[in-house]
Length: 257
Image 1 (cartoon, one colour):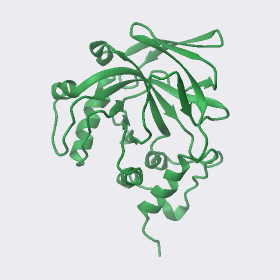
Image 2: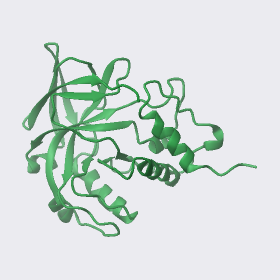
Image 3: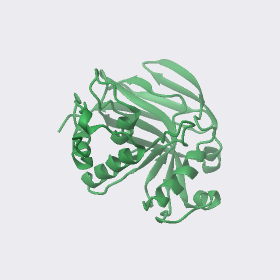
């Protein structure tokens, strides 16, 4: 007889991997995550384990195949400081350059919001980096739903300088320059959902329809302009968003608890 899946046990297992240098998130067949609702339920159970603290949310608009890209950001935001602690991968930091929308006025649960109302509730927009963490064993081929339950590799967000709100909402393309060790890489960045505000409009009503309040001060990131970048640890790096601003920082290694 197949035993029912234990959401809390899976949540505890996945939550522990967030503070582990060498993750062992190999989920047994008996714990198979086979629906989006189940994966989202595990996310909510991890919020409970995090004492209800949610820094914000990451998202894209829903994919054509029905997959959802949505996950809570559980770690405290790192706000525009010169050093950013991170769990590295093979001694490199994995980051995604994005735009962050900072909620100025809370979105109440069980309410629908128009795009114009959502615009008004956003207090500020910032340059931001999603901090990526690989939390499954290297030889384990995690399914999309397992990754969704885990929080889609998010280990936190670095909130950089504030940028012009009007420009941020319209930034479908950003030319990025990443400089480290006097070497520069350039990217013709394109938002995966065309406009960075499109996922914002989707997630607000997706969460509030599920009875989840989005609190003032939370940060919403809506997709990388150039996928995942790998940068060296303990070396200054400058990231420039042409026409919007730049940020300078270095990444230091977090240690496991």
